[in-house]
Length: 495
Image (cartoon, rainbow, N blue to C red; front, side):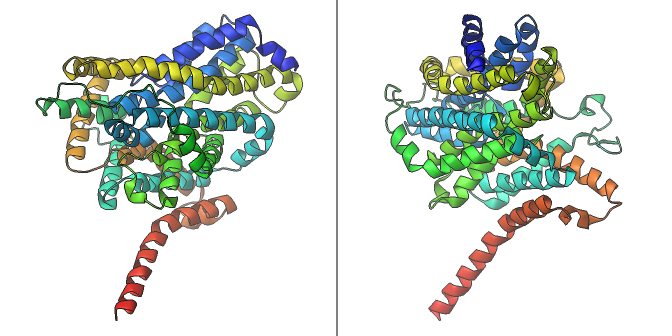
């Protein structure tokens, strides 16, 4: 009750309101990720008291992650990297006149996922933090391999094309300096490539600019698409949420657990939740064609992962992802040193922050509804006007991330690559996940080999690592074995 009294003050509520609006706007702009929005908030939080500052930051996180779904569904441009896992699904639904169902389901599931993560954060922080501390470089390696496996699972169409797309993503991530030896690779003697290719410019190019190229080569397509009206935004949503209750709950659990593992974050959580739902579906072939099942669990995992990531951040001072890394900086700036003792010395204040995160996820529904109503008017703009504006937003977003013209050139090249990939049936999602996870796989693989003097058996030497290895290998081997057994059984029946 004392923590609630700290939270329910005019100043704190006013800051949360302002941060909610700010997070919705920034999250919906391609390139301006939620992490960037939080980073821009840090100088402002310096002038605020601890509770309003931290309450505003966690509110900003919750709103920013959700609002990335809006341009993904309306324009096929994910506002944040975490929305990339199911951007094709929601955009296909929009093309089929189901924009209201896609956005409404994503809105409700994001709120449910955030509430679930908040409750776990409040009541189960110590136990989840202890689990995260058990992870060494071996477990990180297998977790990243599981994420790469999910990249193949989420790709619709040919698995071979999904594998090629993933390989392209891994190749893009290999550009730069070797993480162990420091030797340059694929830099072609230029210093611009020594730092690697930026993830945000690559993401914007693959998803946003490729769509501009496709429009430019499709004459007579200047009219805005007919996607139906959004006055029935929540029509049918509650029915679908009830039907997918187990999948949504599973997405909440996956998001919370993955978020609690340092270095994972919402990106990996949403991909794994999407892949898990597809694997368990009775109609996996429909995924990627515009099915609401592909939106529900992944969007729930998005916001749930923030609550999970706040566990190691507050209890042990270990950032779960880039968002919580900035939050830890704010905690230190406000004199709240993260660690187990923070609950003893400043329990009321840290509990007020947790309650603010819970309140923010409840407020996602009304605020998100208003945001969808505002941003949907983008569709009323003719494509001949909208596409140049999208190009301008892509250039600004790419330049803002790295402050270099080279980032804009990276975005342009990624756009050309994404256009040719999609024209030939290669999915983009595996490429994006390959770019995200390649450094995690490589760093932890090489560091583990250095520690073990080249002994590969060390990757199976710990219980958690062995469990992750079995799951990853089973995902690769079990489906082909089942298909082989079915083929053998059908031959026996036919004879």
